Image 1 (tube, rainbow, N blue to C red):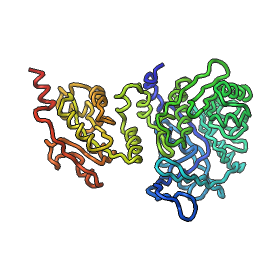
Image 2 (cartoon, one colour):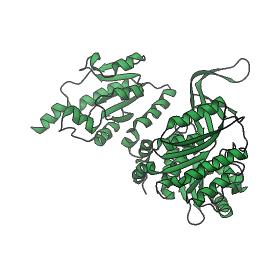
Image 3 (cartoon, one colour):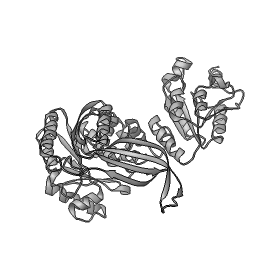
Image 4 (cartoon, rainbow, N blue to C red):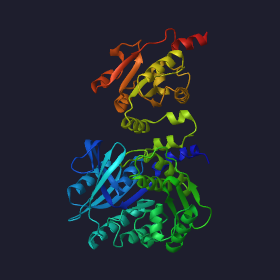
Length: 485
């Protein structure tokens, strides 16, 4: 099966109804640059440039489900401390579903603070309580879940071993979900997997599988034997085992295991990648997609999220882009805005100067090629925004475009001067420019500076606008007119 054959399935993900229970955390990222070693001790000095706070743990599973458009119910517990109140507000702010965040007095909400220089994580500092819930609070949590179960097809247990699923809670929740006929997807922790007995599918990584079975996991054959030992011991339906650079293995009690190769081109940060896999897997199963295809979609999502820095989510459009034929240059260069923004962020961290130009590019002619060449010569990476078919029709009339947006994007992407092509549906690229914030905005010298859309935006943050000399005698309209004679 070609990966592109999975694209129609992505749209189905939002049909899922998923109930997620687990350990809720606050991820705090401190980004900066390191230029020297401290004179006080042999440690780097990080010059802080920005900070970011996001939902982590089960909260990141929720964020990913929300990004996929899934209808959710979320149940967790925090402390009454500032971090607990903050993550509760973040959960409520996501909207689009039901949320129950209980509070336990005296519990320290897990706060993970990571210091990152460029794309390199230097240090992680944790504050947290690790303890099972009090019996009364655990009873409340299980009752909330049991009352919600009739309305959801899939239950996710996101266990980070902080206590929400400890003290017998996991076993109670699995039993209740099984009785309700739900699919049960577990991201497990620890060495005792009997607490998840009867779950539909577990997603350990290779070291976690070794810990749980005390069996070797060095080869694919070892992983299969260890996984089947767990399946036999605890009545699991299947295991999806993450093997890092070696990809994933989907293993059931019988039959040939499914091996999925790792698809990531660049790995910047694996933080939260397992949350993304669990979310996509659960959404796919909840949408009625078979296990093999659900795992393929999750594998594609994992390849995307490890290319991002920080605890990140994956959008459906990104999965669709990743599933396109990776050997075709136009598919690698033509990106949705969300994926383009991620790529631009990586280029910027490496010091690249980002250029931008735009147009309809209905029929590519020497004037276009010259303009693009001049634009690329003035920057390190060139992004080209092209009007969608609907946008061209509004601007040029019912007879245009001559070529549809996919064809126009493919031709532009085949040029060495072009690094990314983004299709936009508005009449002007103003919103695209605001999002991308290019260092250089390029238009032809047939425009005056005050006529260049986005020039004021770019100049306001210190960017430059360049009016490139044009090749006389070439225009798309004139070319079409000559062809019609």
